[in-house]
Length: 188
Image 1: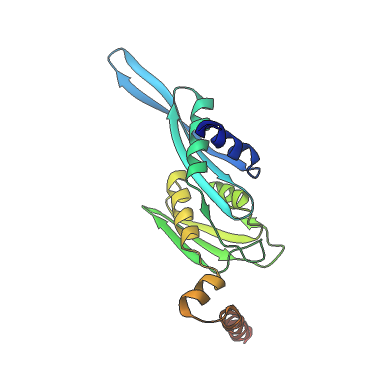
Image 2: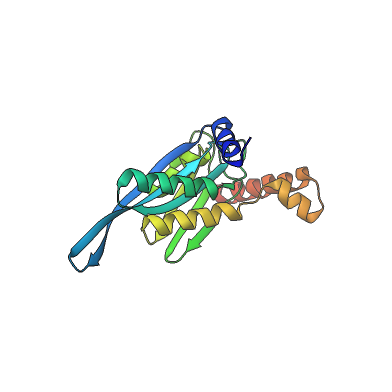
């Protein structure tokens, strides 16, 4: 089996991917005779189980730009640890350029409370409950990059426990104790 056939076989047998088109821009190149128009596409791709990627590409035609951006997104996928398969493990901030985002874990039933481009990322990664706020730039490229910075820095209790040479139960019990003490202080 050739290398090219092997690539196609892996892609066909892989999990079904969720593709979200975040934005399309018409871009112009000024040449001697006037302007040449092209299209730039921003796409988010995920498997709905914790893997997500984003891509940006330009082309003369919209479908071609979307296809190229999707291919880039599939190549740049990252794994995001999820708690109970529905939310993130801890609150985190992400920053890219002027785009800043704040991601907060949420209890079951909250849903995705997030604006435009961030919503597409959370749907693609498979997060069901999250509260997110964009602070600063509302440029989709900056927001997506800041969201990915935050998700890339996300750490699961298993990862933290391995790094500290402790048990996962010690890390989780500490988190729950901190949440209980924070909850008691706010009631007074």
